[in-house]
Amino acid sequence: MTDDDDIIIEITGKPVAKGRGRIGMVKDRPMIFTPQKTRQWERDARTEARQVMGPRRPLPGPLLVSVDIVMPIPKSWPRWKQDAAIAGLVAPTTKPDADNCVKAVKDAFNGIVWLDDCQIVEVVARKRYDEAPAVRVRVRPATDRISAQETKQPDRLKCLTDKILKNQPEREEA
Image (cartoon, rainbow, N blue to C red; front, side, top):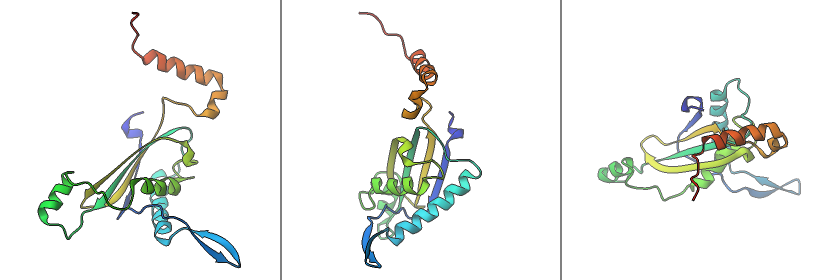
């Protein structure tokens, strides 16, 4: 698969982490509520994902996901520090946590980009500063693997195993 086949989705604006659910009572029953800020960001992310996916169905099988979390540079910083942040010399070691931003992406894209986030077999997340904050997500099928469900199809498993073995360098005997 080439980079041209990757699905790339960008959610502009300040990144938002998946907020911890809060428990409240509704009609004397406990209910868990997702914070409004998280709900709004996930709604925006779903809208963007639907626009990018168009008529395509959610991707099946194992997936590789890359999440680039671009944080805004504090305006209160002096110009030299802002320039250093843009150059990648200053790392955003502040909230939100990268893993919680990834959780928000995974939940928002369920049923749109992928069927379920359990399909994600590899995640790479990076947090950095830039003048235009956003979350950029790149998704591609893991073409070198098959899902556990597909191992019930011996022909598919053998074909993939043969392909992997053919592409490995030969081992020298000692």
